Picture 1 (cartoon, rainbow, N blue to C red):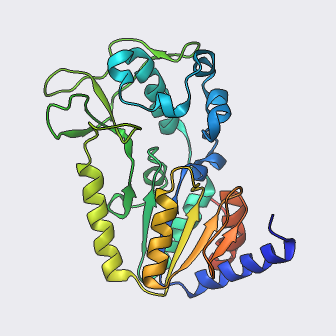
Picture 2 (cartoon, rainbow, N blue to C red):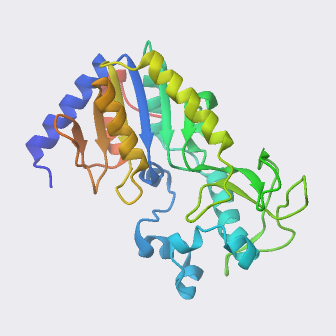
Length: 287
């Protein structure tokens, strides 16, 4: 637990870092979406609270987020991912997204986003598509389950009818337009050897080029809701901070620990951003 005076001091340090920033990197994990009302899948209890039928079946999130279900039980697989697709489409990003976007666009070097989230919330909030890395892919894009080719296509217009009582999808299920086989989200799942990485790889190339061009000690990294269970986002934040001598501001109510010299805030996304970004922008923070 961070002492009150330490928290106050860290908030002050975070504000000062953002006032001095020339470039902004936003890195985000699942905790970024909690203030938008998206479910927290941390631990089996969080997952089962969001999907009670999975609790009755004794299926954990790690077990469910596996491509084998599209062959073993496609209605259950598409029930899970179809429900999430509809949920993410209908969710309004919280006001913290806008605060970060406005701040980043005001800086000389601009901003970039690196996220493990597959929900597309940054795009919905207005962040430029060319400035986002989705390291685990996107539920808003599909691919062939086989796959028959390297084709990735948008899920625009794809609607999956899901029985809310069982979370099973009703046919017809999405199919590959090239071969007619089952389609699946272009999301990197656990034990996934058939994920097509081309879209994410192109995003990562743009990110690397941006870092080479804009990376400096005036780069500030704001990391939100990224835990240690799947540490990709935290590792990326720390790697970039170390390479460029940049400042890392880690916002995480449960795991705010940071490397020496960096800033940890044990707070939720909106609360922290209102305290550190709203004041930097000047005026009242809002949507």
